[in-house]
Length: 185
Ligand code: SME
Image (cartoon, rainbow, N blue to C red):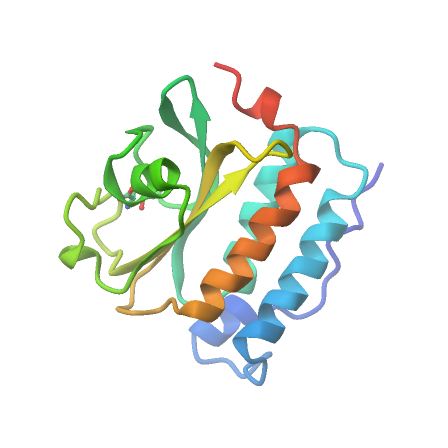
């Protein structure tokens, strides 16, 4: 049984969000490097897309501060379908081109939203969300197959460092997850 991969190093993400000092010295790029290191460990030798994405959602949610939601929407047919996540229950489906997630998928470009109320068409799954970042995920062939969505209950939580860090994470997932199965209707 492989159940020791996620070590018990103190977690700076949610601790920091609540004012604790743990890991508060980490700058964002370092925080993302550490997250990526942990995600690589979680994905090692794991073939099941559901287990992999569930653990990645949990790692992101634990490691990054000020989040109220973190998870995946998977492209199934022509619709985005809710995948593994952490946070409150969320919208089950999102049409391609709709909201921040559907736009990121359609354009194949990350969407950085400092104020969700100023984003036309934003879909409010959790009324506490104030800012959001959505990063498209491509499979090994380069096709956009999913998005990674992070919400924060604070304005302007995400910046270019987040975009770069999350895009590096998405790149890692491209070849480490069985997207064909994940995206099967
Ligand atoms: N706000 C997203 C919907 C998904 S939730 O934030 C979890 C959007 O506009 O696409």
